[in-house]
Length: 116
Length: 114
Figure 1 (cartoon, each protein chain N blue to C red):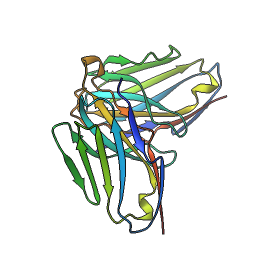
Figure 2: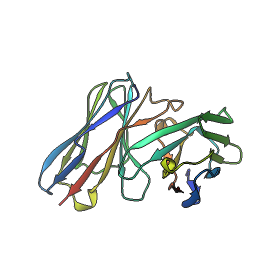
Figure 3: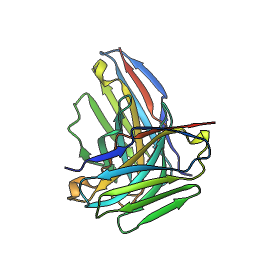
Figure 4: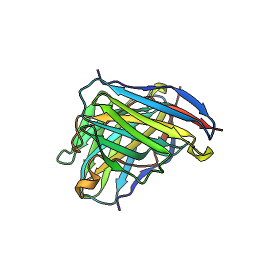
């Protein structure tokens, strides 16, 4: 059974710092991995999608990497800002069986606070 | 436009009420999803519709009844809910059910069952 873990659960950093959020998954058979941002009480905003054949994706100050063989992904945020404060969730799309198609398995999330 | 809309934003209902949640997208996506999210927990998949047909039901109690009237619209009919069903209900869509596609989420409906 696929399990997704995110470390740390919470992170507080001063503004301007570069930071890394970690995501690990137990089964390397995945179709893709997606990083989301969620503000309190709101829906999820898709940040980056990495296909299983890709190693990284970049969008602005965000860079996500994927090492499928070791079951790891990282989300790198450069020059953090107070507006980056939110919960960041990673989710994998499991690759075994047609019954899993369309599913996302989420980690518990990392709650980030960027202090001015 | 990558927008998924959900109505209502907030809903309070009694355990004997019948209500419906609505989700809409106009991106031409052919897969739509319902998720349930409890406080400080990640979303949990409830249902997946692919090409307007129910393809995944994650053993959801029958008091939740999904409906996909057309490719742009997804409903979740609620009946005889329990207080523990109070949660944020999220709708999502993607180009297809195939897993190379990114899922886009709506803002959610905050449901309170009294």
